[in-house]
Length: 49
Image 1 (spheres, rainbow, N blue to C red):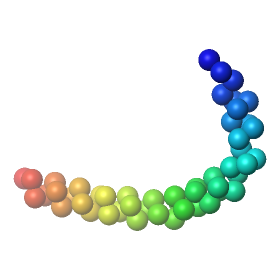
Image 2 (image 1 turned 135 degrees about the vertical axis):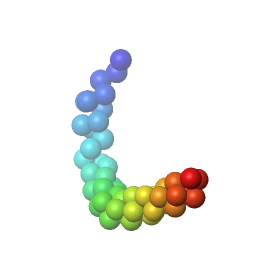
Image 3 (image 1 turned 180 degrees about the horizontal axis):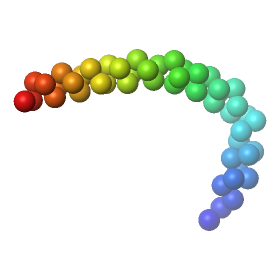
């Protein structure tokens, strides 16, 4: 198996800004996605009964 940890350490500096932006975006959007997903599941669950 290749050295994944070393490879990731080399990648981190280049992708750090991209990663932080992605995480911020994820943290911002995740609650909405989860809420809408939960609402959709509840609607489907009550409709299926």
